[in-house]
Length: 562
Image (cartoon, rainbow, N blue to C red; front, side, top):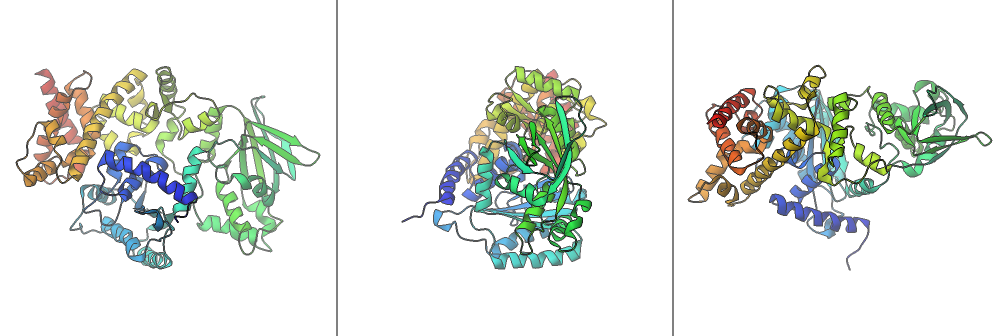
């Protein structure tokens, strides 16, 4: 009889979602759909970008997905068991080393003999940008890596670190962690803490809406108060735990050392709590925090918890400073979190959160039935606090993507930049000029056209994965005599895979009307003619190339005048 537990129940639930994704995208297996599902739900990547992040099928060199963030590359390998009885299986050594091999081919000076377009696109990034950090993430709805696999990877890491000097990290997301992530999506971020303290006094206050307290307490008391909420108490923190790096290991070592533990207070900055309301019970030295979160000190608290559970154990004389901020102003809470964590490099787009133009845009879109997330995960946070109404997923807009498609449509000079590099687009010196005339009507017009363009790009990808599917050719008014001709025609449109911003910009130049099929067909053919005329340019490079954008703009304007 089949055993039924949490993992089996969640497996069936996830599998049913994957089967829908397979149908919608014509993926060849559930593991590809699993990659799509994971990136969408837990990496905050939208459907269109997922098509570029997934290194799909033949020529993937053992890499299932790649994400580029600042000076880091994250390489993913995804495994989803084909049947429920395989949930206890582990990733073997041979399979795991495929990801290492993919890294070698990605970073090698020699171009791999076999590599698909998405792989080569990220290889160009590695060649042209400063990439210092590589993370290898194994996501498997099973028991993760086998001992042999882990040992083989660590050996490879040692050799690669000595050879390249790159920072290499490994992360394993097994069935337990994946189920925890699913649970996390459903949890309310409302935590009420009761914590003992040794000293706590009123500190800097502005008015009745913003108050603060400073003091100190033991590490044991912080962990005891937070124990039931360790999975959600850092949800407002920009950074999550970064692993046992040298700094965090130093925290563990100090907190477990018989002689050094008493000095812990002097070695660490302490913990910052933020809450809606703070109440002190001075008789028993207990503080109650309503709707609390730790917004600075995640690394310290998690490291202390590791010290507590270690063989040496957390020493009782580990004290550390605490600061408590009370405010019900959600925007101020978000700003405090941002600045308290600004010592770590974060996306430039986050700093737009309090820009006047963006604040006005959020209000404008709200009146039109859309929620613009000025801050990362703002909707979920405010919704959990009952501060915003319910919005459907397609009416929740991400700030970064919203500005990206707006600029691609309304600004010819910066359209290529919108596709080429988000960091470049959000440069603090130029972003104000780019968004100074942004409003809700313009955003929604652009969004409507962008969605239609994405449908055709998805159609192309789906047809190209198939042995023969004429849906895209029918859309373009093309016929193929046989399968060989079909493949040749589909390959000639390979640039479509990364062409969302190029098509969007072209549409703005060919017409000011609402979306019409015939206009997009013209645009696709214009782009095909121009890109095919440029020697030795890869399809993915062409769709980021400023010269290509300019040529397409001119040709579309000629079409518009005629």
